[in-house]
Length: 146
Image (cartoon, rainbow, N blue to C red; front, top):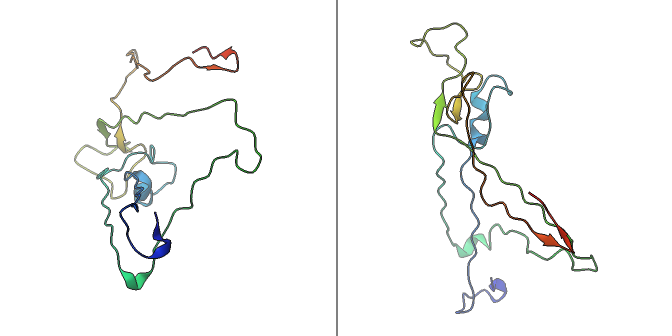
């Protein structure tokens, strides 16, 4: 911030926003669009690499829009908050449906359900998942029961 004078002053700073590599780039590997189990985890790597560079001849480069609160401009503050969480289980690689082939024969394209998933659960088994981070909140005199 503070780029208006074209000098990086002591009080100026750089904010960087990056995202983890997900499975969106894997989608073209599947012949059928509905074959991919999910796009939350990449088949090959979940790492991302970013390079921050500065060149005077390129100008200021890409910028995210500046944040402003919702209540600016006369909007009332919200009286509730909703948060969504997602747990991606990727400790098991499922090789997909075999379509009658043996384990020695692999398809050239990615198969239905092929990819990183959670542990396999078979008929008659049960799995217990513990949900963490849940809290009761009091808002405007009401208590949300979880």
